[in-house]
Length: 308
Image (cartoon, rainbow, N blue to C red; front, side, top):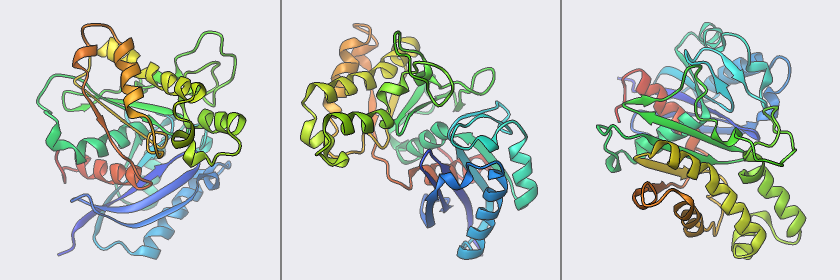
């Protein structure tokens, strides 16, 4: 009897990742290519052909039940339409879900990439979470930019339009740079990986980027960056008083990342005594496969094939 599997897709600002995910959370057939391939005017047709080619190459060992795509942008509440996705603009403004379902002949789930990452974290840490609680679960993910997600009473909280969780697009007073979202002065311009790369190139040109925290983690420019990373966490903690906060991403996965310093800044600047004294964090480690795993497992969850 063939086992049930799903195809998980993670589209980031740099890479497109795809793989086959079994209901036990195992991954096979992982591939990675440049996401720039999908940035043209006909990126959706490229996506259709890429997934077809993937399935022909790998011939997944199982019954493919669905494809789930993590979108680096905002998605409608009914999960059919991408509102804004600066790295894949041709994906926006129409019913992407049903176009892909017509092309591939199986269910397709479209979801914000932050929700996908958080679902993977919840799945792999499900023994540490009380899902019966009425408390809010939060995920913050520091990659090229910053993404976040909310999970409340058994489902992701999407808001009126489906776009809840854009905390890093709150403005910083006095910052006049334009964000890829189109607005001016967004927080992610100072606490995301793109800015960290710029900081490293300007301040520490002789240090390999991967060694930045190990070599310079105690110096003022890097500590200020970590302090800026704390700001969206503090805002969420003060507004929502969440049950649990996941923090992860490419920035925090760097060697020598100062987790203790980040937590210190968060607790010092959150309202006292509560929620500061009761904040609970799960600092997770991600890999290049994390978005694909989260996507595949989320698709299986939507079909009732896995539980939290």
